[in-house]
Amino acid sequence: MTLPPIPPDVANAYDAFPAPARECLMHLRGLVFDAAESLNVGELTETLKWGEPAYLTAPRIGSTIRLGWKRKQPDHAAIFLNCQTTLIGDFRTAFSDVLTFQGNRAILVPLEDQPPESVLSLCLGAALTYHRDKRPETKPAFTAE
Image (tube, rainbow, N blue to C red; front, side):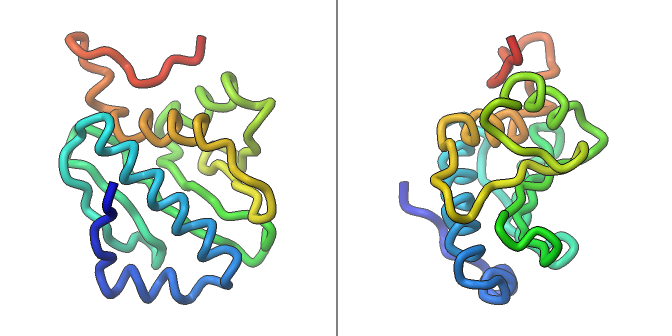
């Protein structure tokens, strides 16, 4: 997939991250767009939320995904999800053996190790379809069975 150009304000946010974090976060950006395309959620809005890159679907399709890095955990990038959803709890139940979590709001991705792309893609897809998949006529992109 050819990724869309990064909006200037979002590009500035990526540029502000340290190089290892920026490289990981740009890789995660690609996974977000790949998941959106494969799940046919429509065009994503790429913007800033709390000064960090964020990815939004059309209303009532998915939950916002925000990518970031914090000085308190300099060896990890983070995929932040809405803490009012069940997403992190569902992921923790299914993937606690391969992913690290921060409370009920983030998946932590080590900067040094290769992230488990297939598992992260499932998680990103579940976030991008969170509201749509609650409808009885649709099949969820993710189940924690």
